[in-house]
Image 1 (cartoon, one colour):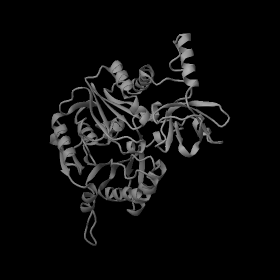
Image 2 (cartoon, helix red, strand yellow):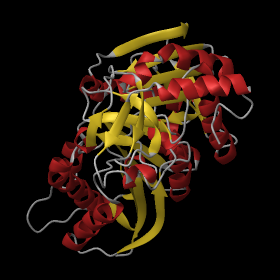
Image 3 (cartoon, helix red, strand yellow):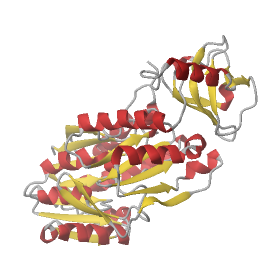
Image 4 (cartoon, one colour):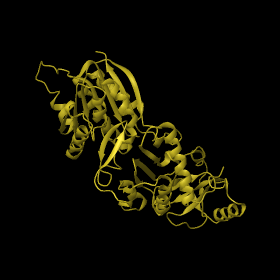
Length: 419
């Protein structure tokens, strides 16, 4: 059913039909419609046969297959390789009412799957059929990230809808992603509504995290790991824990609260380590934690270096590897795999027999199978046998739509070192 026509008067429905009939039409080449019919929202420039009339970049267009069958409506941009980002398979008008209804639908998914969360991703772009729009909720503050021209042109509608739904204390924009330049857009950051003075205190699973939403990393935190922070912590009790690429301390502080004897957190960002230190103090966990600003690769290499005929003495019961993405495109996958294998080799040498390695990859271009194979190759090279005890994915506020492979990117495992 049309999102906007459920309770729409006949005269307004007729108005919509008039609008849609006057839209420029993007005709697809033969055999290019199947992926779109299945639900993928991107139409690439090489899939377009022609436009029936001129369309300005950022305008709403309708899309039809080569037989003139309507496939949907979306935003057009001739400057991008993605010529059209579909919003719906039927007739819509992308006004404030449209965004309000679509965002409310996305919010309902979060309330169903994360009923106790107060901070979470409200809109995850393609996962919520709003390509080019991300909205994160940090308690009473929202952060918006827009990466597509059509969405950027309708920022006022989006902000108005968010204000109506959430009545937030403030709305910040963090549209500083590299992909904006491919849409013909400059970076755009700042506070759009209200005021934000200093860090915002964010609650994840009952732990407080100090987060800089205006000048910090991305849109603030890695909300896609919220459920995994809690899940991995069950391996920490009474153990010595190493949290690599710790950022604000998500995994490390959860491990400390779960009863770890000690947690050592590593990150190359001095600002991140300083914030993680403050977070540990705020949550009464500082006595269990130590912090080090260091390149994690260098630290792992230095702590596994031995003289000839010596061996590394394993000293950790739980090691967590949650690095940033090592690859942004398919061409760099081989280099990324070498990086993943390197940290796995080193970590396995430091892990006690019976200990657990929790490891994550956040690159869409590295499949779950390939990531696991890389870890098992490291285990083979170090002559260790592993038992898989858990499999992880992104938290439900980052929904996966199987027909849109790009929506599935985070994967992880927990492996027990058998010998």
